[in-house]
Length: 75
Image (cartoon, rainbow, N blue to C red):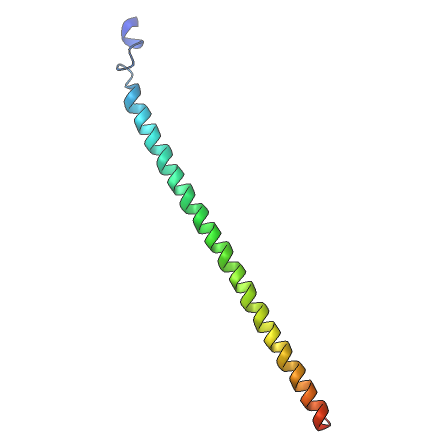
């Protein structure tokens, strides 16, 4: 009985190692996809910030022009 327990084939060690390596590989792939998604989301958030800042700049420019026109017309 002791000889069977010390035999790696008895415990199916190579098959178990192969299964664990596959599972670790799948988890690594999932983490990579999650990281890519988070980086994409962060980039999208920054793009929206830039768009909002441009819109604010346009609004302030139009406001400045309208104030200058109002001063010129005597309002």
